[in-house]
Image (cartoon, rainbow, N blue to C red):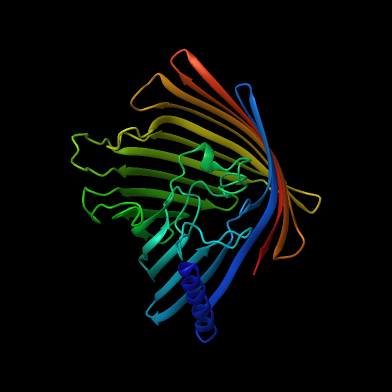
Length: 357
């Protein structure tokens, strides 16, 4: 309760200050309902509930910039996420979604703070996993979110990134996190005792065509417990082409998450792909997607997982700020351990409303 009051007071103070400065205050509220039928083996469970952030994470955002002259700009972006169904904060962090300061020059932009990784599908620096290369992006909850089908990395603390100017449609991105999570990780920032992230990516845009490639590495903490970690590696490639009548997109990924030194942890290696299309229909937009994932445990190759999924959705804008959405998805997950296997079949139907301010 005390932390919530402090957060509310801080946001109120920032909003008041924004009115007197060159700061933009905006946000998103997303609230809806979802029905899910899940069958694990012979057992079936059905749920119906109100869900927040099914399509887009609810948030309050502060953005600002100052022109220092000589083609130098300093700016910031702060995003505070919340759950619209109960009003609580995300993970008890004031600016969990993004807390970023940047300096932009003619030679590129330097970013620092907390933001999404290059293949996170979220935030200001992501170039893979978002809605420009997958119909449902990282949203749409349990229907077809790439977060459930590919190795979509999260947001990281203590991050530094460089974004180059665009040359012939190509932009270079380089990112490093000195310590991925200040809240959960007790290691020392910038040292082998903490988890770190490294990523490099290329983004290409030419008219109706866009593409991106990201290579990243997870440097796991060495805790001195006699277990030697093996760093994880992820290679992601995606592209899309807008034909006017529809946009066709494809994403592919190879991942080998290595072995951290935490006993009992579940790491995997394998590949995944997502094929999708969007098209304007009846004044709104139709979304369709199909995905497949094939992976095995990095320690026990007899432990395997296969996932395939289908999704269909529709959205309609009542105005520039208010959007209705609905979607249905089916996912089949097969876990294999030696000669035995278990199938989980999940059907999800959801609907909701997104309002921007």
